[in-house]
Image 1 (cartoon, rainbow, N blue to C red):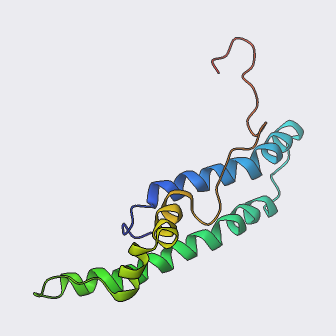
Image 2: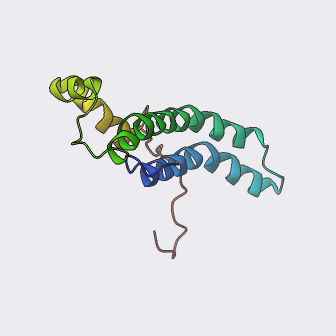
Length: 124
């Protein structure tokens, strides 16, 4: 993941939430039954996170090639591309990049009951 846009930690947290939501129940069940976890659950985590990750990486690559490389490779004052200037002037469009950085393609939320409650006497 490129540092462009500063999304690395956001995506790491979203990956962890997706993994917790998908794996917590099956991991608990496989541990209770002393059997290996079916790798299909790991594929489900990858499928859940692959499209958002590829999308943000494509956007980062585009920004790197079209904006940053041009700005850093020129001695002239920086002039944002026309599409970027239009994006910045239309509030609905202006908010899209910020939402993509903050939330990704779709929000990741911890499901209720994804984590077991602490056993009596343990810290929560």
